[in-house]
Image (tube, rainbow, N blue to C red; front, side, top):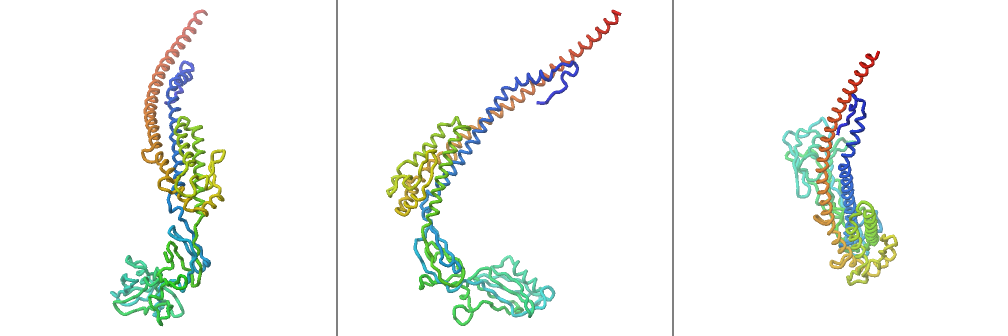
Length: 446
């Protein structure tokens, strides 16, 4: 609504204050409506916070609801200068001896022919081509009439380049072309051919490493032995599953022992995250019940009751443990959930499968059952989405009513302004007449 400042200018009456007072009374229904809208918006925001806390809790449960979460292993190498190792969930505990005879190499070829410069002298004649093969794939580039630098760029920029990089090196003899495979091993062995004469005389820089008497593609591969007798050949220095579930990254020739063991620290971290997420959830529920979601007490109490009830219920999964308290998850006086790492460590050592089943059993596992409960609230069309939709529908109706009330107030203010303007003119006219009569009577009396 527009602010009016000229009312009463003619009569001197404080009509603006009178108008503001009347409009304040007229605005009371709108003010009350906007207060309710603020409250509903706060409830929508609060339900968003609740959904976030539930989602965080569900994410923490997801790390414990699958059997793979308990099949976490670590692999360490006794000599990381020789190789490093990593383990997946399919790995088995044990110690393994690995001897690296040689690591995989990149095939490199250098030209025997040198040139005095890279950007002036041209090579060959128009139409000459060079075909480069890497493994079973090849590509062809035009080299005739090009400088050494232009040939390098033609190779590197070829859209069908199958895995080789060209460069130029400069020694005392001059400039020469160098080709290097982008990947290691025999699968990236380079060969070249020319449509005309060979302008480079490329030769391998790699050497015979397998004692065959000459360099061959096989010399590019890595070779290692497991337990001193089982040989593995690999084109890559990343060797996957030489031991089931274990990957090796070869660094240099030598011998190292790989130790694969259960990563109980990772499991403890997942259980601890679960406890922290539960505590955060309970704290959020208490905070929302005390302030922004006072009218949702039954909903909030229902969520907390279901979660706490599940944490205190026997899982009946057939292992050594039936309650989460038996593996170190404990409820404190303030309602938070904490983890006693020592109790968990002992439980994992005593009955690892039983601890895993307590969470992952498909029927009675704690994490599996809690995940199902969270879905009731978080899934599309679930309880919280329905509550949010209901509140948003209320807001939509309130916004429509707000627009109507604001339009009505504009009409009322305009009506008051017209009435007060007429009053101002009338009083001003009467004041003028009064002044005239007073002056006239005064002159008669003299």
